[in-house]
Structure formats: structure tokens, C-alpha cells
Image (cartoon, rainbow, N blue to C red; front, side, top):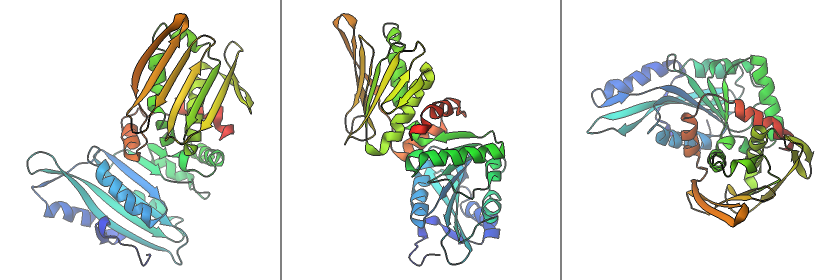
Amino acid sequence: MPATFDSTSLGEPVAIGQIGRELKKIWDVGEGNLTRASLINFAVYCRSTEALLENTELISEFTRTHACRALVICVVRNAPAPHASAWVNAHCHLSGGTKHICCEQISFLLEGEIKGRFTNIVFANLDSDLPLYFWWQGDISENLNPHLWAWIDRLIVDSIAWHDPKAQFTRLRASLAEAKTQLALRDLNWTRSLALRQAVSQIFDHPDNLPHLSRLRRVSMMHAPANRSTALLFVGWLAAQLKWKMKSASPLVFTDAEGGDVSIELQASTSAGLSRITLASDDATFALRHEPKSSFFQAVLKLPGGHEYHHLYPACADNILDLLDEEMGRANTSEIYLRSLSLIESLL
């Protein structure tokens, strides 16, 4: 274990083989005042002790609205010798009167070579038959065991953090195909554009606006430098929903279902996230702008005949806890995401 590692916030240190017994002690001591709650297993995989501590803080907030048994697994491969440490803790939140609703957290620090230990240690400590949501932070390991996916109901990744997204998607897809799993793949980077996708959908729900959707000729977006892949996923969604096909990667041009060209312009800006988007047909424009610290997109719709309309739509979340909250409430499917990804993956 790193000499400077302060594990106080992780709870009580326990021997790997005594985790169940030590968890029981927590409830025995708090009997009458503590109620254990768990609807899912929520596992988080990270690669530094700093991330282990940060995730513990995040889990404390996460369990205010999501009852779970949390497993936070830190893997440090460059340790001089193999070693496994574990801690147990409970995150308790007041729920009326003096009753506390509590969720368990089991933390693991796996150092050195972990082959064969990862699955055995971690998945021996799942909470009964509850579904497993697994959040894999950072790049996908090259020596990943495909059998891992058999345990997982929903795999959460964040492609914005990947150093080489194209290679990572290729590795992940190959691993999932080898395992022949039916798990749902969820990407927090895709979730970042959820509110924008919903706003655009609502705009074109109106019968006056809908005809222009099939006649779009230009899409321009401004995004933070780190959010280029977020913007591309949004473009992939548009292309998938409207049955566009890529004509050129540089400049980026799609052809629509009727064979017309749709040019795409992505521009980095100093604003956070996805700050501006304009969709234009030959005779109409639909622009959304997100100002710093605002919770809304400001939409300006200009239609033929000089008609102009202004609307407000909820803006995209970028706080990691908000993104996870969104994921917990979404349907267990990844079909639209995967279809959208396939259309822009070569551009990542």
C-alpha cells in the first residue's frame, strides 16, 4: 500500500475473507436506527488511490438517491509486489425523524499482477442476485478478461476520457463480441448531449418546423476542446435518425436520404461543453445557445416569411453526479447510441 495513502474515509480495514462478517457488524451495532437499502450493485473501477478516495466521496452523494451496494475497485499494476486490501463502510442519510437509510460500500485496493484475482475477489462480494451496474473509468485494459462481462447488466464508460477513442471502441467491441454478452453499454459522453438531443427533437415536433428537418443543408457547432467527441456523437445521432451517409471526412459532409449535401462544421471555443448549435435549411435556421452558468439553451427559430420565435430548453448536464443520475433513470438499451457511434467512429 502506498506510504502516503490515507484510507480513513474508506471505513474499517478488513481481511478479504471476512468482508461479509464485518458488514454484518455494522448493522448489528446500529440496529434500530439504521435501515439497509439496496436495489442494485454499483461497481466502480479506477486506477489510482486518489481516484479511490474521490469515488468514495462521490458514492456518498450518489447513495442519497440510489440505494445500492457499492464496490469501488482500485487497481495499481505497477506495485512492487501483489497485494490486496479491503475496507467496508456505510453511507447513511437521514430519512425523516431519526431513521437513517444506509448503503454499503466495499473498497478494494489491488496492487501488482491481478490476473485471476479481480473477478474472484470482487464478484464474490456482490449483493445477492441484484443487477450489476459497472462503471469502468479510463481506458479499457489490453489484457481484459472477456468473461468479466458475463456478470454485468449495464456497463458504463466515459469516452471523453479515452486517449485514443477509436482504438478503445475497437478493443471494447471485440471483447464484448467474444463474450457474446447482452449487457447494455452506456457512455457518459453520450449522456452529455442528452438535453441537446431532446431540445432538437422538441423543436422539430412542431408541424411548422418539421418539413425543414429533411431539408437541412448545414449544421454548425461550438464546443469546448475536450468535447469534440461529444459533438461528434451528436452529429452521429442526427445522421442516424435522418439516414444520412458520410460523403467526405474533410471537410465533413453527409448526404441526406434525397442525395443532398449536408455540411458539418465543428469549432472549438472557450465555453464549456456544447455551447452553440445551428441547423439550417435553405430558408430557415434553428439556433441554440448555452450561456455560462445558465441552466437553459436559448433557442432562436427563424422561419420563412420573417417569422421568428424564441424558446428555452433545459441545458446539458456535465457534472459527473448529474450524468450518473441520468443514467440510472434511462432505459436499459444502447441501440441508438451504437448506431450513432458507427457513423462517426472513423472521425474520433
